[in-house]
Amino acid sequence: MDTNELEYKGNKFSMRWDSMEGILFVEMWGEHKKEDAEEYKNKFFEFAEKIPQNTPIQILVDVSKQKKSGDEARRIYTEVSKHPKSGNSAICGANIFVRVIAAFIATATGRKNIRCFSKTEDGKKWLKENITK
Picture 1 (cartoon, rainbow, N blue to C red):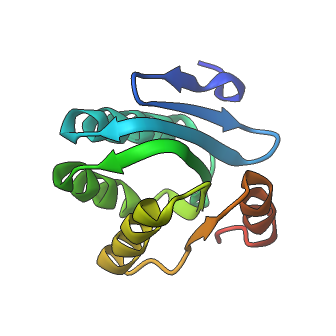
Picture 2: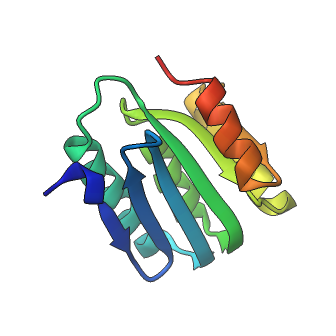
């Protein structure tokens, strides 16, 4: 598979690798349960293997249409965040509930490279200025 065309659309999220930008674009919507998070984890791990990059992957996640995540889903997202190829993560369009989850994941994983932004443009700019080494 050509890594320039890595793309997936599931029931509760979509994922697209943009080789020109060097960013994995993710969009989430609806309420996320364990099975949704498992699907996301499996796809992220699959993409991480196919993206030919020696450094961690910059990730921009648009959660403006996401409702909430259950406890099991949050635990699984924390696992994904610990993946060695999981780099800087810009969480965009987050409501207060999603911001709390992002803070929880950052604390649980010890990552200081997860930031929340109101606008996707701001998240993208931050990723470009702070490329994970």
